[in-house]
Image (tube, rainbow, N blue to C red; front, side, top):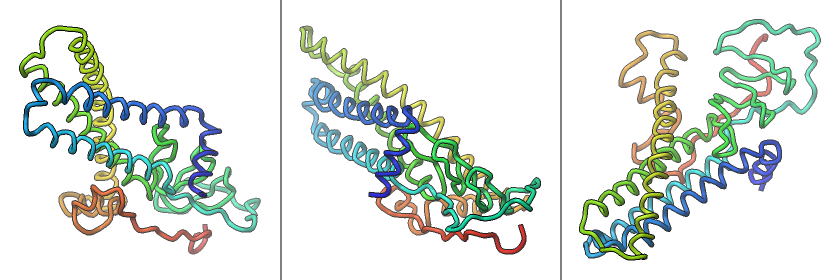
Length: 268
């Protein structure tokens, strides 16, 4: 309930954040309808024993896409808790600090841990904040970056799968002329354009997310030697958690929830 209330509050502050998730759900719904009602019934696919397998596989990808998107929307991105009592900052003068030190947030009027940044939409500091994404109406932070990357991954797979089915229809035997065939062709064209548009977009964002994860870990450790296979694996485990790599693809698993102290250890 608290997550739903927070999401509704963000919608009130950011109309784009309310529109983009709705557009995403409508696009996914149309893609599923077009595949089941106009692509798979085409002569090139409906007579194939693979037709029901295509239907089940495509809907499984859609289910995983929606599950990861829902988790990214309603999950706590890693909001830094506010102190119960006001902190007197009158005698403190923020100085330039590096990314491994505590800083002061003048908007939250609180200390924030290393790698935390203030979100102007959520009006809170978020630990390891990447950006505020209107497509999930939430910040991308330490606790929901896994779900956001899963959403990008499954959106890319679903787009590629839909585009592949359309190409298989066009390269297969024709269903002849007629009104029904023209309607199916129109839906195939729209589905292909939608798949290419979203597929290219999420691929670019997915690449940016993975690169930022792999390049952040060596910098955080402050060692030039902290790069390569082991460092990259450690960086990915920090986001997706330990265990089997296949578990990284499951939107049901929950990353470990770190504990944040309200005050830094030592002088600030």
